[in-house]
Image 1 (cartoon, helix red, strand yellow):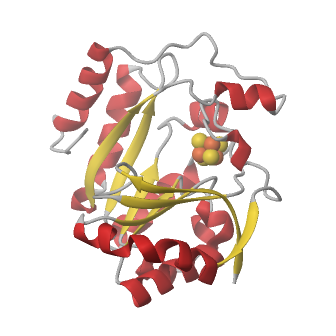
Image 2: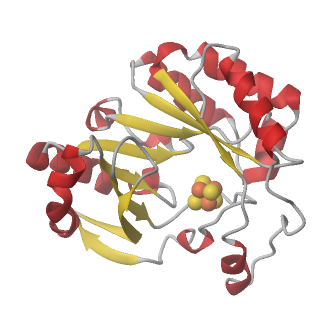
Length: 243
Ligand code: SF4
């Protein structure tokens, strides 16, 4: 079983609980304006690896991952673009190492996989990038409905989720939008263990230039402290843990 990957990060303290081994897959169909990894978009880019080769790379870290309560996170790009490869990787890493698995996705391609496929996923980090369909399309280039459908599907299966929301001034910080987003997340129930509010940053801007892509957020600043606080409180007021 082969897949295309962009890169690997060992010892990450984000993207799930504990210390994570993070595999970034190659290929994404979205075009988020704030993407900091546009070099993952090309579905033919990256390097080809087998599941066994990835397992060999994880093996030295298994003790550390387990001791820290961490595990493997597959991010992207969009992991569901290579669902067979990722599913097999999750299956084997759990069976052979007993390591926790997390999937970082926006859910756009969730219809490509069965409910059984999700049995090998311990935690889904679900990016719900906007709550209004028109704004979601403008921000990401794609329809919002598959993502909301994915969220409801996971909640229906009782799967654990951390919902992620990138806070971009002028794009995703309007109080009414954040409140509607929080209402939707609250409607998913206790499957959502937390919301992670990720402040926008411009660290990937130079990559856009190297790829000759127009970056629209050059004049957008990271959100200020008060905005972050207000957004966190919006979730917390609905009984949702937010960080
Ligand atoms: S889904 Fe992720 S990788 Fe794809 S364009 Fe958006 S931010 Fe970039």
